[in-house]
Amino acid sequence: MEEKISFQSDGLKISGLIDTPPDHKPGERRPAFIVLHGFGGNKNGQGQSVVAKQFAQWGYVTLRIDFRGCGESEGEHGRIICLDQVADTRNAVSYLATRPEVDPGKIALVGSSFGAAVAVFTGGADRRVAAVISCGGWGNGERKFRGQHPTPEAWTKFTQMLEEGKRHRERTGKSLMVPRYDIVPIPEKLRNRMSSGSIMEFPAETAQSMNDFRADDQVGNISPRPLLLLHSANDSVTPTYESIEMFKRARQPAELHLLADVDHFTFNEENPRLTNIVHEWLQRYFPVRPS
Image (cartoon, rainbow, N blue to C red; front, top):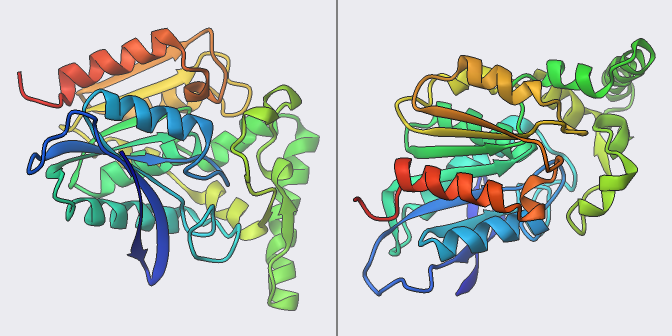
């Protein structure tokens, strides 16, 4: 029950995949989730596929999208600017609301890593979003980067890269291209978990936009709509304190779960405990059918 679709976002064609629940009946409108991928990933990543298929089995319509510049979507390849991704997400909500199988008042967001930060920000900024699930997300880009570049030498190298990016742009009118792992370090042991086709080089403006992005500023605005924050207790990519800090700023109903037996690419692992946490939360706060 998978359908390839596209919609417009700021004049760009955004590519997506819709999964419809196997028990969906013609004319029936269901709650839906938009599935948001991580940094430089795409809609076909293992984690995104797992979430979309599982949620569809539970009865939700799901839409996986490629952010602009990623996967099969239009836009300058690799030019990932946080507020552009928020715009793509909001336009995905507008598109999904037109679908005959979707209840337009029950469209939620679920994101991983970078996509989780975008989900939280969008959920706070757009009242049409009915619920938010964030997995391995972050609330303050600079605070996150300080955790990812923890030594004085590493932090100096990172901030000098941001400054050189600005100077290069001023001198040449072109972007300074930066290797992926100079922006977000990922341990060797986890690199095989990344989506096939992940982008490996980005303009320095991408790192600057992430540094300046503050999902913290919007997380409190999600209430009274429900928020679920999930994070590895020992995340080796995005510091665990990022979800803790967002939880401190959130208002009820909000839940935070830290899982000891998973790492950053949490949804990839199809962890039974995580699956149960999400399913129980959905039944309580965002059920397919009212009890």
